[in-house]
Each structure stands twice: as C-alpha cells, then as structure tokens.
Length: 474
Image 1 (tube, one colour):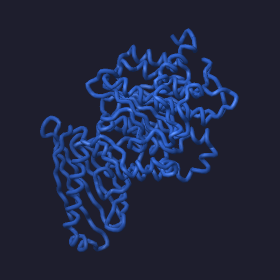
Image 2: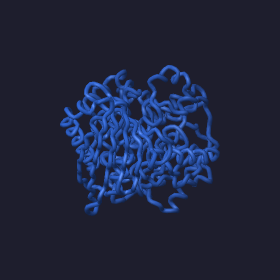
Image 3: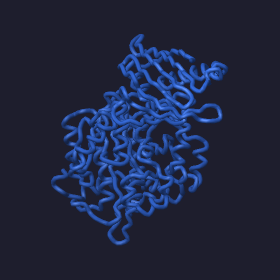
Image 4: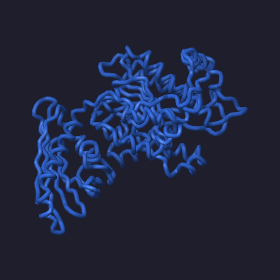
C-alpha cells in the first residue's frame, strides 16, 4: 500500500473548485497522465457517478473505472478507481481559507494486486513525483489565467492549403486540437445564456455542457412537440432542466420580433447569446413572409435577434458574448449581395446555405468592431464535419462518404461551449474559430470580399427586412 498526500491553495471560491474537481472528466485537463476521461453514468454528478479514465503508464496505458463514493458539497469528494493492476482511493477535501481562496488537500492510497507491491515500492519516488505534478496541474487549471488564444504555427500552415485545412474538419482535427487545449475551469453559475436551436444536434450538446457548467439557460426551439422530451433528456443527462424554453420559428421575422420584445420587456440581462438555429434546405421554398428560407433562417434571423437584444448585452462591466455558429461550407462562397438570395431557377441548397453563412461570418466582424465600446465580444465558429441530425437528413450522400471521419455532436459543439465559457475567449473579438483556435476566413483569394461589399451588408439587411412590408413585423 502506498499513500500520496499533496496540498495546494488556489485563488478561487470553494464552490467553483468543488464543482470543477467533482466532474472527474476534467482530469484530462490537469493530470498529465490522463489521455481520456469520460462520464459513463447518467444523471447529475453525485454519489454513484461513474467515470472511465485511460492513463499513461510508461510505454503503455491503463484503463481505470472510477466511482464517486462520497459527495459532500463544498467539503469532500471520495472516489475509488479500479484497474487490472491496482485499486486507488482518492480523498479530496476543500477548505475556504479566505474569501476567494481555497485549500485543496489530496490523498491517494494505492493497493496493488498480483504481488506487485514490491515493484510499486521500487517506483514509489516516481509515483510521488507524478502525484505532485498532477496537483500542480490542478492549481494551474483553477488559476484560470490562460493567455489570449492564438493559432499555432502548425495550424497556420494547414490553413494555407485546402486539403490540409479540410482534414482539420474531421474527427482527426478535433483530436489533434485537443492535445493543445488549456484547461477550461471558468464557472458559469449565474450566467444567463440564450441559445437558439437547442432541441437536437449541436444545440442540444451545447445545452448539456452549459447546464453542467452552472449556466442559467434560456433555450429557443421551434417545435413544441419536442419541448417535454428535450427537458426530460437534459434532466436525465445532467439532473437539471433548462430554466426556460421559448417557442419561436426563427425563419419568421415576426417570431423573431415577438421573442426579442418578450425578452426585452422582462429586462433580464444576457451574458451570452448563441445563434445556433439552422437547417440546410435542399428544395427551394419561401417562408410565409415571402423570403427564401435559407436567408431568412440563417442570416436575417440572427441579425435581427442580435440587434434587437443589444440593449440586454451592452455596457456590462464584464464583456458579454455573441457566438454565431457558421459552417466550413462558407469557404466555397464569396459575399455577393446580388446573389445572396437564390431564386427558384438554379437553386442549390448547399450553395444557399454557404452564402448565408459567409454573410454571417462577415457580419460577426462588423459587429465586433461596431460594438467594441459596448463591451460586447462577437465571434463565429464552425463545428467541423459533425454527424448531426441535420447532416443525416440534408446531406445523406456526404454522410455516406465521410461517416468514418465525422465528429459526434459533442465534439462539434465543443468550441461553442468554449467561446461561451472560457475566460480567455472574452479577450478576443471578431474572429472565426475551429477547435478553440482562430482560423482564416478564406482558403482561396477568390472568396475575399472587398471593403465596399462589406460596408453594404448591414444596409442590405435593413433594406431586405423593410421590403418585407408586413404589418406585424413593425
């Protein structure tokens, strides 16, 4: 039997420290030996929660199954980890030693199987060194002072060639990026997040992660029939339900206006607005308000909603955030206002989608500059190629060809969550992200718009909106 004891002090509240450590998936962010960490049980984190870890051990890896056996907020966690070769019992205690400062004490007791105790004793010094390094890693994670995000030189090289840039859209790109990520320990307790398109795919995965991080969620969905099942599913996964759900068909500007008026009337400030709602329409159609549905849902809707909610976000002491979910498909298109609204003749759903997402990417940059003095950070992201219900229904051929390299919804949503949550994500504005790194917005010079074209986007949006000339939009 070998027992390790380490203690650290960190400048964080005891509640924030406890919540971060209790989610043992965070081990991969602060323990250098952890290469994979997953929660394998349903429900909220508490007594009985189970985690699966894969840890490096010299030239090999060891699989461990952890069970949370004691959960006493904000005081103590006890976990038992079992592997083929040993059992470890971790006791982690938390003590608020002053306002905003916490002492964390960690004791790990290893019991070895198959007569390996003697071998372990010979390597005890190395084991103690690893324990100390792990707690130092936890201290760094809880200090939460990561630098402003920048693109790695390797990423910049990949973005200079189309093929290597496209490879980054795959599951390979996600796992490559994850190796470089800094810890994300920022607590979202009390932060009000408005998230559109939350009933499935990226939006649902984002909702789960933000609930687990403590956010106060307002979800916007279109289909009332999905409301109960969505809330039930969130509760099964996290033990929590969204604080509120608003019903709105965001392809209709009248619904966008009603939603914005309701939120403004209530006056609850917004810390994060995530414009995620979207769909790829393979067949041409106009909305009931007479506009092509791709432009209505993917561009006019987030533009109008964000502009209308500006008063609930502007002038806060801490930067508020707007996150626009776009698509790598926009790399194929140039901003061209004369061709932005596709007609029935020659309509192509993928092209219409990509053109609207290109315009939303440019709009992100315009807002970031215009709202800098309002302390509003505006960024866009794309999820890579993710195997979402939208891809399955709208792009079955693409999915058949790429299925083996597609990301899951959680991997695709990761950068949305990071932009909403990470402290350092509030230090940069007007950028386009993939896998927590700022990326180029153009892979070909032919898609680069002129300054004149950029300057006309906002007037074009306003003019298009006014041309709808529907009384109930006013």
